Image 1: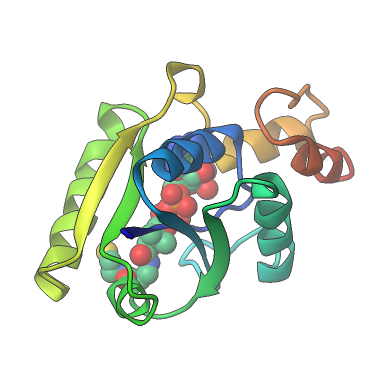
Image 2: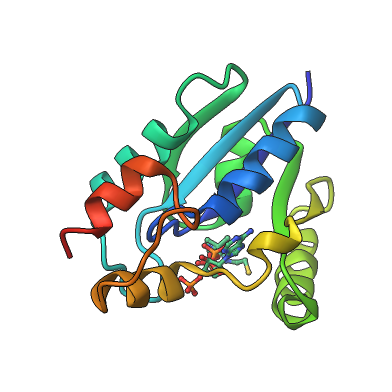
Length: 156
Ligand code: COA
C-alpha cells in the first residue's frame, strides 16, 4: 500500500487543499496530511487549531490520516514510512518554489518522490492568506473553505 504525505501549514485549510487531498486519496493507499508545527511564516492559528480544522474537514474519508511534524520533511516522511510527497499546483507562479523544494527534498532523500497534482481551476486563485483577509473584512468565504473553517473564520 503506497503512502503519501501532503505537508503544509494549513493556516487554515481551504477547499483548494481539500481538493488536492481528495485527489491524492484516489491515487494512494493512504494520505497523511502533515501539518507543520512551526512554519517560517508566523501562523495565525495555533498548531492545535490548525490540526482540529484539518481533522474535521477530512472526517469520514477512510484513507486519510492527519498528523503534525517539525524539522525536515524528509525525516518525517521516512519515520512515517511514506514513499511520496504530494504538492498542489495552482498556477505557473507556484512552479519555481515547488521545483526548488522538490529538488532539495530529492537531494536529501533520493527515494522520496514528489508528486504534483493540479488544483481544480475553481481554486487556482485561492490561498490561506486571501481567505483570512476576506474573513477579516467580513466578506463571504462560503465556498472557499470547509464549513467548520468558515464558522471559525466568521469570528475573527
Ligand atoms: N489550494 C489553496 N491554497 C494552496 C494550495 C491549494 N491547493 N496549495 C498551496 N496553497 C497555499 C497555502 O494556503 C499557502 O498560502 P499562504 O501563503 O497564503 O498561507 C501557500 O499556498 C503555501 O502554503 P503551503 O502549501 O502550506 O506550504 P508552505 O510553504 O506553508 O509549507 C512545507 C511548505 C511545510 C511543505 C515546507 O516548508 C517544508 O517542508 N518545511 C519543512 C522544512 C524542510 O524540510 N525544509 C526543506 C525542504 S525545502
